[in-house]
Image 1 (tube, rainbow, N blue to C red):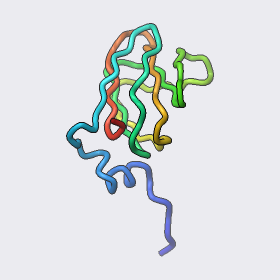
Image 2 (image 1 turned 60 degrees about the vertical axis):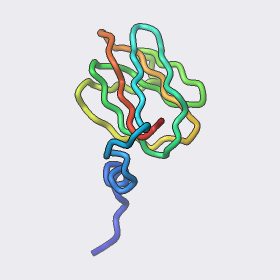
Image 3 (image 1 turned 180 degrees about the vertical axis):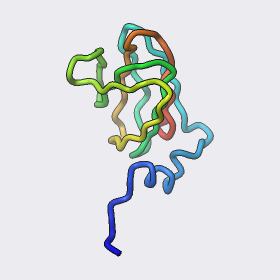
Image 4 (image 1 turned 30 degrees about the horizontal axis):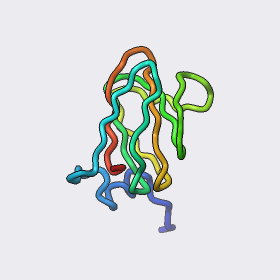
Length: 106
């Protein structure tokens, strides 16, 4: 059986990212203005948002709705991302304000 590259979710489970850890979560409320998270302390994070939103990663990112540089994140869908330690995430609403929950990034 050939070796295969593990999925991000498999890596996240292996590293304990998908298992809630004390003091490893962030909640970023978002509106029609870009909001920024704290810097990431891990390589993999999971995101869950209460409303549709747009996210952008970087050292000092600014998210913008549907601008071609931000990524759309639909509500109620959990996604795992490989990130760079020290980077941040910016988030902005699509149509309704909400909360973005980040696990593993605090």
